[in-house]
Image (cartoon, rainbow, N blue to C red; front, side):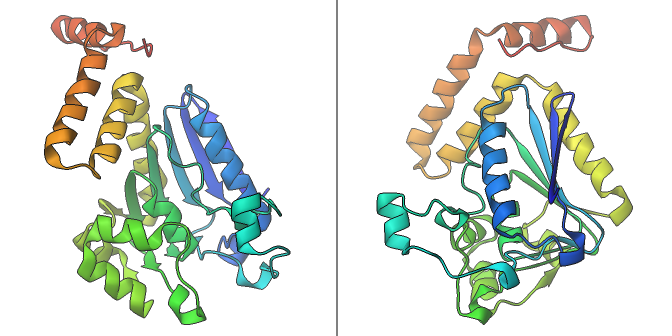
Length: 262
């Protein structure tokens, strides 16, 4: 399988598995990824997700340009009539707008669509050997899975426009400095760190976790005043839950809380 998927105690792991091709994404992989995003979004038992790549060279080099045949229908037909429901009709991140937190573990280079998958995640950590680029401009194209929209929101216009318009790569320490990733760790510690973050999230109150992600994601596009009102509304929805009561009782009793998502 070119994508490995497993779930253990509420933590799902998605591993891009074409190391011989730098985990480049062909059409079958794209279809599989889109199906996995839908599955994860519809499975509340999955409380956190880790995405990584196989091997120690690449997270993903992006779309496999050697295996990208011309489309059989026009983009307009795909968009407006749903014709040719091949993977090219949807981006690599189609379906990733769920409330389950996602940690991206960049185990090597992340170029093009590979970086765009990471940009759609909530937490990004990198091996110290990782490199990052959106090089589409050098082949006469542009990022089509959120790169031009998510990157400026994450790292600011100046750094993002430089990366987008030159296609130049940056290293892991630069990515850390400009806020593209939150942690840089040794290659052999990457999955341990990523999994420990996912485990901590999965052990927290699931309704609260989802509400926090929803508040942060949706509030980002609102002016501050309505965003604060939106946050207060979500807080109010959590106020009378069983999990909030359990959290307070566990704190008072100095014991571990047992959250049930109720």
